[in-house]
Structures are given as C-alpha cells and as structure tokens.
Image (cartoon, rainbow, N blue to C red; front, side):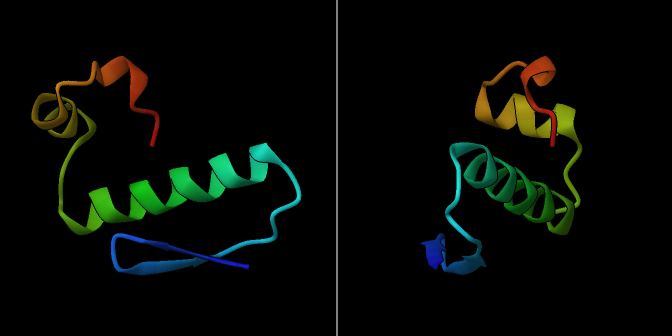
Length: 55
C-alpha cells in the first residue's frame, strides 16, 4: 500500500498503527535532514517543543 504525503510516496505494509507511526517518523526525519534543519530549528519554526521532536 502507498500513502501520498506532500508529494512523496511512502511504501509500507499497513499491519499496525505502530508501523504507520514509524513510517511517518522516518519520512519526517528524511525531510528534516534534506532541509538541513536541526531538531531545535524545526521546533522553533513549527512552534512544537524540541523535546517532542524525536526524529
């Protein structure tokens, strides 16, 4: 199964909610690193506490 997310396709087997969370977390991590953004910079830009950004 594929999920279209912000123009990118993530392939995953939809076997559990945990699998979906892990796939989404990995996608966000890749996007953050491509943007050369630190967790702290992402936290500031998104107004989400840095302690909650684990990717």
